Length: 129
Image: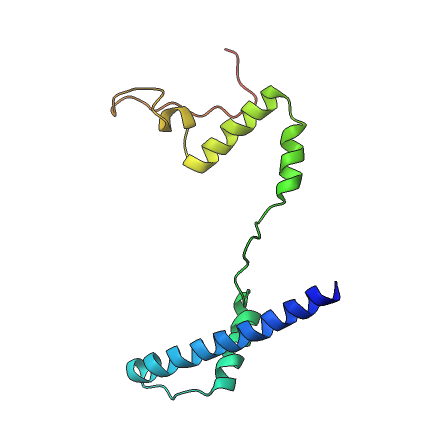
């Protein structure tokens, strides 16, 4: 456990130095010539990186991290019935494509002049008229 922590700290320090060096070199090569700005030192480049992290978020890229918990999603999927899985697939396809998934995948062949099929949402009540 202690070795992993020391290794992580070393990686962060090396990454900070590398990113600071790259930032300094890019700034000094581009911005003085384009916008007539002064050149910056290594410490100023490191300060810019830290400031950008504070203002905009991630200093280092997040390799292998997702915006959701895969295990929780797998458990939820595993506990669903076949009907719930089909409803989930339909909702996901509708969100992903921005329209009815059957129309997008070409299962309904209609002319462009005809009205496109409306997506049925399983969670909305239907009128039986």
